[in-house]
Length: 463
Ligand code: ADP
Ligand code: MG
Image 1 (tube, rainbow, N blue to C red):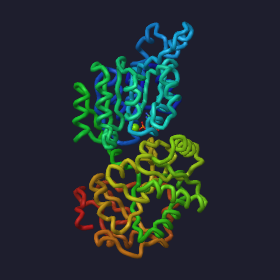
Image 2: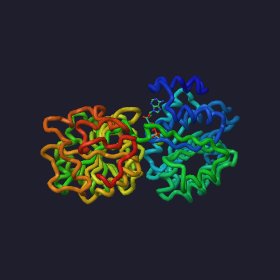
Image 3: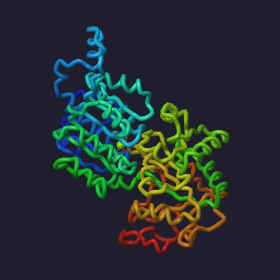
Image 4: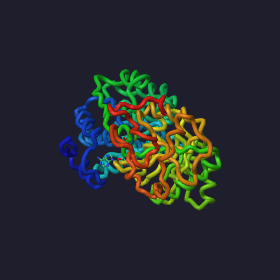
């Protein structure tokens, strides 16, 4: 399948070729033709599967085809004209044609950056992000350009809507990106208000990790006869990401092990997840003293500092990012080879989002959780959610002294072979066992195949 075959216009295809996209991903294959045809979409597929292009490409195609706003002046021009007439210029509301709502500022910026890339040959189409933390005059300046495409977090957008700075009466396309996350973050009322302000003739596309529960209810309310696209491939299980658990006795053991693992030769860049903002700062300081180029990223930082940190990460100046869940949501840096859970996430869903920061765009990645013995249950909750077992590993010289839960501890001996320089291996050489596959030589499971012969998962009771 090619992008041409999906019906996209040649200016867009040229931009994709320049961006190094050779063929559409599965979610793009399904979403693009349906969206070009004007259908509403409900889409769930894993992180890193190319959802941004799945909604942005057909939208750009549609918007590029519509006539430029007939003889319309931009709000800037109107204000200048008013000034020339000696009138006090009144701010004219921006009238976007497309609105993308995202849960976080980082994600909004990423969507805008991608849009700029896809639309480089479509000069007329402008995309801007309106975000909390951005200086107000700057936002006014952006809105005064009357951009066709607005990318925003719900909270800040409501402010502008209510003060008459944005008028959605001309909106043609509404996208809710990571809708489940926006609802988790408590944006439901804001979203409903925004949706109510848009014409009922709009096209609506909703992207979410899951389409049931609260998200499903909202999805049904705001879409009309939607096409449901669920990509349930092997990739959903993050099979290109090797997962491991290392048990630790205490904080000092955890820190020593982390430092050791960060020296993995195969590590290009890493994200270390912590439970608190304070820990993120403390660990970043400690790692910098230890000679790593590390930086923290969390919600207490000013937007400018967050952007600078993300830029340094993208440019490779920061090698190790220490982050909290919300701040790291949606980060898309293909050179991230390792994800560490310094603390386990509160919700299993977050585990999936965290490890999805590596293994981007089809690459391999390694996700390592450092787990206290008392947290065995939390690992099991994650395993139940992902329907995958996470092998436990031990590194010589960093063995836990205590044993974890009986189910876990018995599985360790025999797993690690001294001299087998695992941390020096490429992540891709340690892919997760496929159902029915032979037990991994170096794997953490004692004895037989982690799955029973019929391919079903072993019960938790025997572990
Ligand atoms: P998602 O929103 O599903 O998590 P993204 O839209 O952020 O995924 O895309 C993940 C990565 O894959 C990005 O780096 C993006 O540039 C890249 N990508 C998307 N589509 C393609 C494609 N067709 N070919 C190559 N790379 C792609
Ligand atoms: Mg996305």
